[in-house]
Image (cartoon, rainbow, N blue to C red; front, side, top):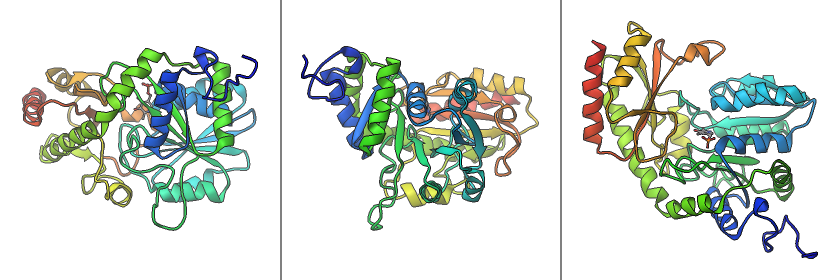
Length: 361
Ligand SMILES: *Cc1c(COP(=O)(O)O)cnc(C)c1O
């Protein structure tokens, strides 16, 4: 026992530090994302918190994209702020805005591709280059790409340079689980020193993962690429159909021509032709919030729910005006509704949308 070392996965010291089952899943997630090290935590949000707490200290500043996953910002404002870590927001569609927001106190920049809810696709290599030039860490929320749409640690393979994020967090709750029945997250790194920091914070906070949960994700992982592709194909078909319906003034989906950042998606994910299972619509502003709610309630196959990546389709209406500092110029005015497309038949889902649209009339 004296020879055991908790940081070393060749030994099994205490369940909180990992088990043979969680070590196996850690290695597979690191491989999936093209990283070297992985730490598992009980949720995607815990992965976000673990990464930030490992890298930041009092006096540091963090930058979040305007379309960040909401709970990341809530964690920053509700917890990090009390420990003297400040947060600013930048426009992810404008790398020059990121440049202007970085100060000597900035240590960490978060990026998301595509952005949460509004699904704009940023120029990820450009944002990363800014971080590298200014010597600040870049952390990606990689839940959308899932290790399949692009390689976060080598964004421009074949370019002769390695441009990659420092940290990739992933809500394994979504595609790796695939069942909508397990909560888990991961923090993947390539740099051993960064991994040690993440691992130390993980140990101090007691963010262990149950072996039975890890077993469920291990079982789902081999079918992830097939499921991701099925979600993707169905989502594009439905997004295309929605773009022809007069009730929707905008359809947001990075693979759809005209959607914000479509060219950046094409550049980064075109070779894989991968675009996950989410799309959003903006309803014509003539519809009241109550009418939009009635539309969502009228859907039978799309259940009301926040998550995604599971077999069941889900829908959530969002009031964007409450989520953004100002209304982004590239978004049409109106109430936004986000769809997560499951594994049901596309024709059934399309018929469901059509019958619910009649409730708007
Ligand atoms: C769901 C999600 C998370 C958080 O995952 P949980 O396991 O639900 O905590 C983080 N980031 C993104 C982009 C997500 O969609």
